[in-house]
Amino acid sequence: RKEVEQDPGPFNVPEGATVAFNCTYSNSASQSFFWYRQDCRKEPKLLMSVYSSGNEDGRFTAQLNRASQYISLLIRDSKLSDSATYLCVVNMFLGAGANNLFFGTGTRLTVIP
Amino acid sequence: DAGVIQSPRHEVTEMGQEVTLRCKPISGHDYLFWYRQTMMRGLELLIYFNNNVPIDDSGMPEDRFSAKMPNASFSTLKIQPSEPRDSAVYFCASSLRSSIGSRSGANVLTFGAGSRLTVL
Image (cartoon, rainbow over all chains, first blue to last red):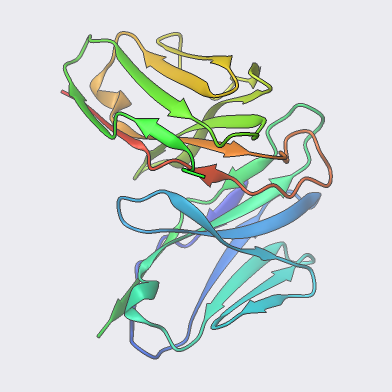
């Protein structure tokens, strides 16, 4: 089982729609969570961190469900510029010196005019 | 700050040739990571350095791959000899504080623009 799993999509939604992505993680000791955005042929960039209480940044809302071990990203009022791949990233403490940061393979979103 | 700088941006080479990818991290960042990204496997961590010292190279596919960080502002990833299955985008990333080995780590990785490698 992969440490972090995402639905690869693609999600094709019309402008103005609301879309949600989920991501599940395998290690219950995971400490922190992030969503990164990657545009076509570009590098990943941090979109937002995900806090236990949930957090919002404009049209973007991130939620964490520790009991079910998943995080979500909700995008409201989709814009054409939201078209990208969204990577779920989880920090799991596996011991001193071990790699803790795990990336999902990404969910591809296309917003259609 | 210019961000993380990688070169070359694109490289096309023939099987068996040596490939050297270069990275300049953000000044002051003490962690440097090399990732490889393919459609099938997504982002895979190859190796990371802390204060120029390799800490975990368990992601390096095989002996054909090697990485060095001779100083705080420069790192290389070398593939010798290259094979078609090495074709991928190779990203370098740096971080001021790493999640590696830390319970409270909440670092933010800054990625370079990547080096797109095609081995024919």
